Amino acid sequence: MKSINPDDFKVTKTIKLSKIPTNLFNEASDEDKEEKLDKVQEKLSHLQDIMYAHNRYGVLICLQGMDTSGKDSLIREVFKEFNSRGVVVHSFKTPNSTELEHDYLWRHYLALPEKGKFAVFNRTHYENVLVTRVHPEYVLNENLPGITTIDDITPKFWENRFEQIRNFEKHIAQNGTIVLKFYLHLSKDEQRKRLLRRLEEEAHHWKFSPGDLKERERWDDYMKYYEEAINATSTENAPWYIVPADDKDMCRYIVAKIIWENMKQYSDIKEPELDDKVKMNFAIYKEQLTKE
Image 1 (cartoon, rainbow, N blue to C red):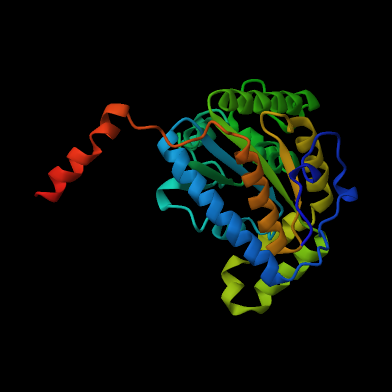
Image 2: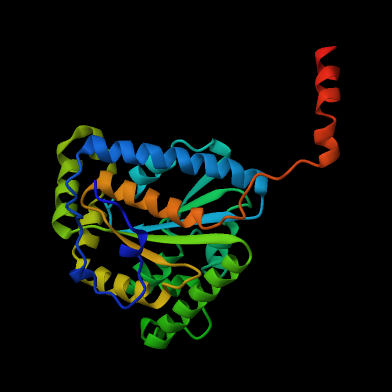
């Protein structure tokens, strides 16, 4: 398998999704991809144990993508070697009545990772500049000052939201949260195949919703707004990575590899050293326990 370079997927300049491939077309076999993923899983799991003892950083993994892009299975496979205490997954649905009584970022602040832990946002705060742009009527549910009709939602409104999101991510990054954002780049044809699979295979019936087809009709709108959101919010504090998602095994490995390569840069994440006096008395402690 060719070496995976995270910089090849990182958004550092203006992108156009239609020009970015949805399949890496790597010659590696499925077995090779799974073996590579297994090795990275183990490394990340071990690193999280050290992070837990170090207790200075949290890691926020943000996953966005169209329906069927593979977010759920990616989470299951990439993080399955983690200690259960070390990773928390949050799937953000339509805001409930309590959440709507607060600003749109409030519920995301509440879900940020504790120090020493990973948090995975399965759909994220970016829904507030994606779904709400395709369906601006949803913004009216937020009961915002000066916004009483869809006509009140101007381009400046979205520019302000992008700025608010950049500030949110800058703030949490400066306070010890490592932020990595992934857009799982799925082709429209591959989505069609996966939706058909949900209809054809009984074990996957539960995943299907007629709403998926309605959202699929707005594919071009979603691509437009994803482009704008990614271009407006990929920063050094919180970079976006666009990962080809037509091949699920390769997508999982790329995401895991990017996380690992980023985490390796934090050379200060180490297990804390025991006090010298405690270490000097190890023999005494061992003798005390042996005599019990």
